[in-house]
Image (cartoon, rainbow, N blue to C red; front, side, top):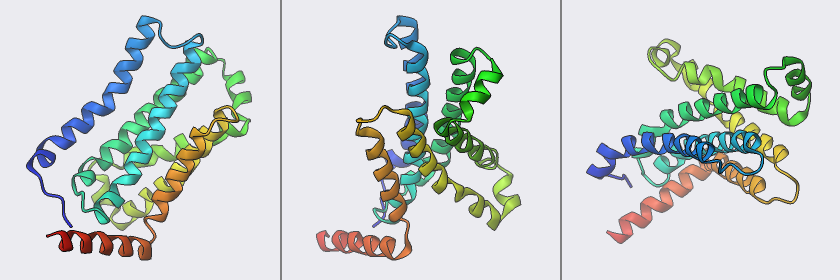
Length: 209
């Protein structure tokens, strides 16, 4: 089953770029209006981190959407989603260091010794080589190593979900749901499962025709 549609071929990438910028614009507007809750600094840090997680998971979902459901337009936005995830991760860390800790790097280092912050830092650092090498000429220069390098995204998604789990207060279900979703998307990449589901949906499409 292959997804072919002129609208998606021409406009889907543009709409994806616009959608990735909207959360930042909404954050700026909310800050300007004073609508970031009683603790606007913490709210802005949490929001940028959450957006980064969402974009990482969406980028992870692109390949299963193509291989299993035949939604090929997803592949055209996969790199952009990853790059925007890195952008929001950088903003997340910048707000953490500047607004929350006032560039007091001794305090920042002390905080980074805590598991949630250490995992968040490792996640961000692992994103750096992926973001740099996502643009030409790196894919061609690295060859097969480029694909090997970008498989780090699997671990990065897991780490990002764990970071979110440690940041959010206990008793909140949402972080666990994100963890389950990440694991589910990773399971879909296991070759036998991917082939089985891909064959199932292809059969369903053929039957309906």
